[in-house]
Length: 383
Ligand code: DCP
Ligand code: MG
Image (tube, rainbow, N blue to C red; front, top):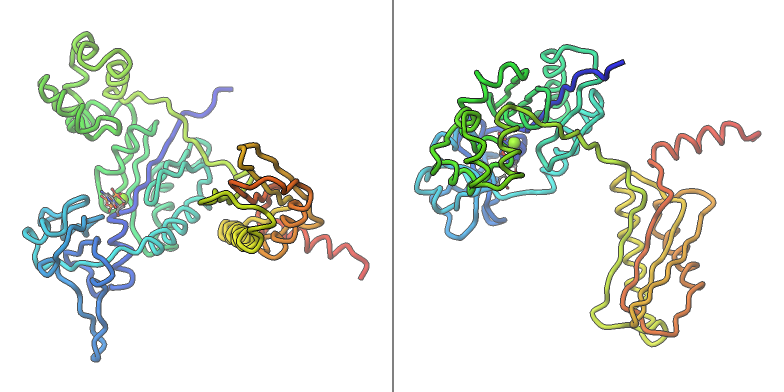
């Protein structure tokens, strides 16, 4: 039996940071808005309930724009542009400060919504993912619509999706009909749809390569497909030239790399000066407890519990030791982790000074799974 033909999606959120901000300031919908301010650009709530926003023309500083609404882009403003430069193009545009916590929150939400439908996801950053759809038995268009609907229901945000036989083409396609777009192509569409595009649309042809290609008279991906292989090799070297020859024909065999579950989560710190277990006892103890607390927070945030708590020490002579302890039941509790780590500490020599100390949680299970297992176990107990 042959494996099914590959069907890969690339999903990219539309004007991501700006769209998240519009969720909390819906009165700004339809207006040019750029994200890139500092805290002093926070909108001010007026007594009559309306909000007063900072405008680009009032900005002084060296800040850079992270992104802009499509209305602002129409005025020539966009990512990576200096805010003061943008102010010349769009003085009346609203300027909002960045809030990475909010963007990370919505990033997790949209990825979780997609995973409910299509779990084979490669995480490519805060607002984009690849999805392997090869094993899903549904036509591309309704599937893309269903994914977009799920993202919208989970976040209130729109995204754009490209679906093609590989990552290279899907990445290009998700951008073709932004915002709120769906673009579905096969390899047979490459000459018509991909060849007219400028070479820089290929992920991996950066500004330098684009410039070199321009000098050679190669502007579009179609030009690249017509280009003489020997000439390309002469200018770009064998391996990059071979790659150029493939990508311009839409060839890309890279797999979708789904993120694997972590085996362990750890926290460690190297001291500013070496510390001694007895003489610097209070300081060490404080650092150790703080590490355990942070580790517990890491576990809780990622929704894991751990059954094995370990420590790592590095002495002043750079020798390292580790010890671990398996608990009767998994935990993400800071005090429990601190106690277990303390037990481990009792089993190592503390004569020499220490350079580094670390705490590790392994034998991880998803917190929900552990809770369910615990519940079913209790169900079996003759209470
Ligand atoms: N970003 C940034 N600095 C850049 C580019 C992007 O901080 N130079 C941030 C802000 C964007 C987010 O990353 O919202 C995602 O980047 P995209 O390139 O996907 O841009 P957008 O999602 O904003 O817009 P688009 O609809 O074109 O995808
Ligand atoms: Mg985006």
